[in-house]
Structures are given as C-alpha cells and as structure tokens.
Image 1 (cartoon, rainbow, N blue to C red):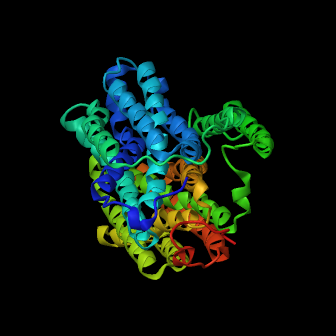
Image 2: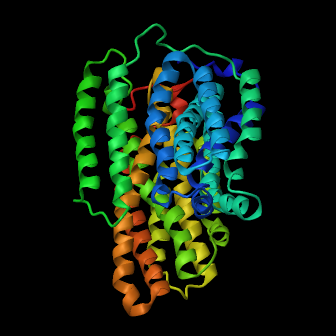
Image 3: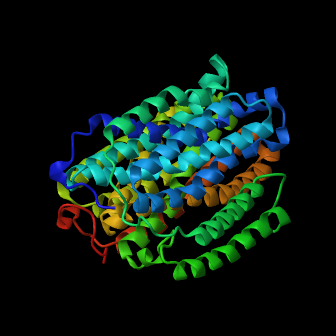
Length: 481
C-alpha cells in the first residue's frame, strides 16, 4: 500500500486522536474484565467457564491481527479499520446485554474479531499519514497509550464494577467507538491497496487459525485445574499447534499472496525486531500481571487499590515511550534507545528480587519506574524499526506481526510464569504464611521473567542494523540489511 507523500498529507490531529482512542479501547478490553470477573460469575453463573471470558477475546484478537494487517496491505486500511471497529462495537454491545456465561464468551469472541484490526492498523496508519521526521514522535504517543491501557484496564474494571455495573466495562466502548467511526469516515482518506483482484490465501488463513487456536487453548489449559505440561489438555493442543505451524509454513511457501510473507524473515531488522517483541513481552507481563498480584495477595489491597499502586510502572512506560519517540524524531535512530531500554529493564527487574512484605513503597515505586522506563522504548521504538525496514507494500503486515509476536510472547510467558509462581507459593506458604509466600513468588517471577527476556532481547537488539530512518527518504522501505 502506497502512503501519501509527506507534502500532501493533511493535518491529522483529530484523526490521530480518534485512532488512538480506538486502539486504547481495544487494548483496554484485554485487561478490564479481570477485576469484574468475580461479580460477573456471581450474576451469570458458569464459574467453570470464567477463564474463557478472557481467553475468547485473546484468541480471536490474536488470530486476526496478522490477517487484518495483510488484508489492509491488499485492500486498503480504511475499509478494514471500519470493519474492525464495527465488529468490536457490536461485540461490546452484545457483551453488555449478555444473559449467561455462554453468551458472554461468544460475544467476547465477536469483540476480539474486531479488536484484532484496531492496534495493527492504527500503527500502520502512522506511516501512511505522517512523514518520517514525525513518525517517531507519533509512535511514541501510541506506545504511551499502550502503556496506559495495560495499567488502566484492571483499575477501570474495578471502578465500573464497584460504582455502577460490570456491564459498563463493555458498554463504555459504544459512545467512544461511535465518535471514532465518525472521524474515520470523515477524515481518513481512502488509499487502495496493492493487491486488489488477487485471491486471498484461504488455505493459509485456515491453517494459521487452527494452529494459533490450538496453541492458545493449550497455554490457557496450563493454568487450569492443576494441569502440568504433560497433561492431555495442555500437551495435545500444543503438539497439534506445532504440526499445524509446520504445515502453515509449507502452505505459505506455495501461496501466491501469503497471509504471512516468509520473505520478510530474510530481512534482518524485521526478524530481530519480531524476536525482541516476543522476548520483551516477558518483561511487560512480569510487571502488569504479577506486581498487581503482589499488592493484592501479599499486601491485602483491593483490585482497584492495587491498580493505583502500580502507576509508577505505567508512568515510566508512558515517559519512556514518549521520550524515545522524540529522540527517534530528533536523531533518526532507534537502536541506541532500544538497547538502553533493555538495560533499564534489567536493572529495575533485578531490584525487584528484593521484594518482601516489608518493602518500602517509595523504593518499590522507584523499581517499577525503572522497569517502565525500559519497557517504554519497546512499545514505540520496535514499531519504528520494523516499519522503516520493509517495503511500503508490507507496512500493515509488519505492524500486525509485531503485535502478534508480542501477544503470543505474553501468552507463553504467563503459562511458564504461572507454574513458577504456584510452585514458590506452595513451598513457602506452609512455613512462612500466604502473604510472605506471595511476596517471595513475586520476587522470584518478576526478575526471572524480565531479566531473562531483557538479556535475550538485548542480544537481538545489538545484532540489529543501526540505520537511520531519515536515510529512507519519503517513506519506509529498504531491505533492512
């Protein structure tokens, strides 16, 4: 898809705000339902199905991310974005009126089908609508919104549940989403893609959907009913996913218009940035999942209060993303800031190994801020790196796959970390009590996840070519060395 040249791009402030708003809603709904789940189960029943309220959304939104990205390169961003927003709003409305748990799970799946469009297409639109000298700053704003959504979701879910109804966690999307639709229709210019008339890769879509569905189901089952990695509900779906992924690669090698062009992985920057996105998901989820659990289980705070306590992490991510975007815009380079971010993650995560029930709040706030400052560059800098390393016709695909690898990395991380966390709690609780056990589990899991992820990501980042985005002229492209 060919973006407009910089000189003809209109002033897009209102459009940018609308796209940011839509992306925020889609990411918010990954986490907003968590604190509302106890109330949902109390009202709708179906306690044995409650995890699928989260999994259904994660499943459909993760699977569709690469599909929307590739199809937007082929058919244009605007129609795919509007389809995604419409599905997301329809799913939100249906979730808000669900009468039982089965309905809610089905409607969350519909919501996820639309959410899969909002993040990758929003990221791709930055390159379409803004010149290279501004794209770093704009991606910094997008990264800041991502950071805000990860932290604000549990807090807002608790607020809606405590002050109104859990249904407002879904219904709140409607007024904001309708404004987004109106602005996109009025302000976003239609630019046709570069593959109109070609036959979609139906077989690739089918095999990819089956493979990722099996993988996510297996990883979800790992956290349920005491299942181990060798339990049938975990082992067989993951083994099936591995077989299907091999089949998917074979299908894509023969497809005329593959849904995931394998040629992109010969691009060193693309391949290494994708790997870094997968690996730094461990750092991200270490903070946004297990630190709130520490405040609830070890310190006895409510879900809403725990959301407030991790705001240093969010503010660090917002600041890190915005500053990185500004530095990229000023210097035209992204590699130094990504490498610096990995080091900050390691320092902040290592300090978290000292977490106990007696840790001073000021010290812990500083550790979380360091962790957030390191994660911020990963939310904005990796996007710039990957978008300015591929040909323009693959911008949507590359943006979507970066998001996809982050989400898959998060799912794998949670499955691995859940096992470690539970084992530490089981070992320490009989000797030291549950509060101390949960603090020890946090002090084990956060450094283990984040330091390991950051060290491995650092290797990928150091191997990445240190190119300037300004060298690419009017738009993204190049071979990424």
